[in-house]
Image 1 (cartoon, one colour):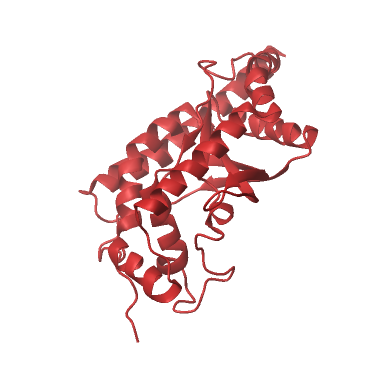
Image 2 (image 1 turned 90 degrees about the horizontal axis):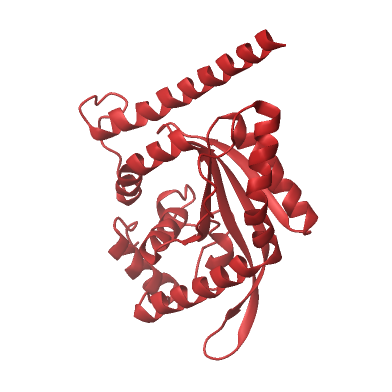
Amino acid sequence: MNEKPQTLEDYKKWLKREHNVEISERTRTRYNTVTAVIKQDYEKSDFWVDVVGSLKEYNEEYLLNRGYPLFMHLDKPELKIKPFRSFLLKTFRKNITDNKRYPDEPKDGWILPNNWFSRINDILRTMLAVKYLDGVEFMRQKMGDHCKQYGMDFEDHLEAREEGYYAAHFYTKRKFEIPKIPWDTEKIDFSVEIQITTQLQEVIRQLLHKYYEERRERIKERDLKWQWDYQCDEFCANYLGHILHYVEGMIMEIREKQKEEMT
């Protein structure tokens, strides 16, 4: 029996051996072509143009109701494409490292080129960073209203990870027409991830990104958990995320008390 893949290179060999899928430069080129088409389509969609155009209105509505601005800056959110290597690593985790049923397929089946654009939900993503904690729920509701207005399916949930990461993940769902091999096109279901978080949490996310990537490539966990290894970088960065989330909650409590005293 073949051993469980332990590295990304092992995984590529496993894909070839078990599913006749070869990860080549052609695979990368197709990924880049498809994602570029989807990004361009999404950026020009009435839905996204309306979302971007409404941010100023939302900022003013929040300011009127809460007495504080919703955003620090009203810059246009940037839609980013997940790099191919990160994408492939995610399929590795879904198929192998996080698959408790291995060597059998995951609960929803193998993630392979014939379905992976529909199965990985953060290939195209963006970030909306608000100033205060209650702004996350405010924007979460606004995004839901936008999706309903345009008849788009969506899912959303609040993330609270042990690594000190806090954000709302909002997924808009629609069909995109993408190029097939060699000349035709096909329509696929595709999710775009919109992360809604606070500015402080976004700073922490940038700090933690390096450790997230390192952990994702690590097959075996270290013997000493990061929560007990006070000398490791993760200990400081992760607990800083929890501390800042607590501080943001305290800021909201002070704001509420000040509001009560003024009424």
